[in-house]
Length: 237
Ligand SMILES: *Cc1c(COP(=O)(O)O)cnc(C)c1O
Image (cartoon, rainbow, N blue to C red; front, side, top):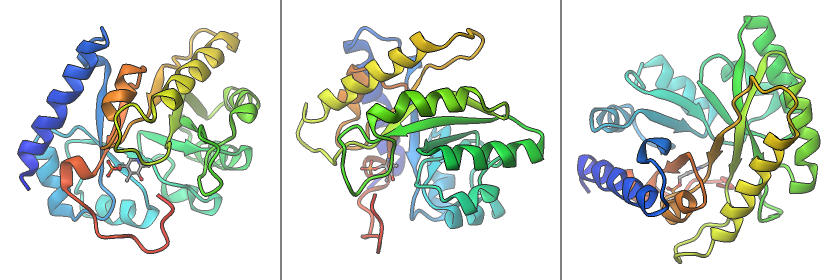
C-alpha cells in the first residue's frame, strides 16, 4: 500500500473519467474520506496532493482539528450529523454534505447565525430508498431545498448521495443520473440567481468513475486511497 501512488492513481482515473465524459477534469474534486485514519495518515495524504478531507464522525473531526492534522486541506463533514452536535461542526468545516431534515437544517442555521457566518451545505438524498440510510427521500427534496434557500445563514451548494456499495461497474449509474436530474430540478425552481448550486457529491471507491460520467463534481474516496479499513462497530456507512 503506497498512499502517494494511490493518490496519483485515483487522480489520474478521475481525470480520465472526466475527459471520457467530455468534461473538464478540473470540474471534479477528490475528497479523501478520512474516517478511522490517524493524524499521520491524513498529513501524508495531504503531502501526496489531497486538498479536501471528508470526516464522518464529530469526535474524529474534533481530534484531528485539535492536532491540526488537516493543515493544507479543506475539511468537509460527510457523515450523519445529529442535531445536538452541530456546534462541533458548523464553522469548522467548509461544507456539510449530509443535511437531510428541516430540523437539522434549522439547527445549523441557528448555530451559523450565532457565529455570524454563512455555512455551506449539501442536502443528502436517499436516492436508492434504503431503510438503513440517512438522506431525504426524493419526493421530499423540493420542500427541504426550499427551506434551505430560506435560511439566511446557510448556503445551499448542491446535493449528496450514498447509493448502495457497488463494485460492479455500471450498477449505480442509474442513481447517479437521478441525482443529476434532481439537481437540475432544484436549479430550475430557484428564483434568485445569485446562489451557485452546482455541487454533486457522489461516487466512492467502487463507483466514482460512473459518478463522474453522470456529473459528480466531488467524489468521496477512502479505501482506494488508504486501503481497507477495519470494520467499524455500529456504523451504517
Ligand atoms: C467511508 C465513506 C466514503 C468512502 O468510502 P470508500 O468506499 O472507502 O471509498 C464516502 N462517503 C462517505 C459518506 C463515507 O462514509
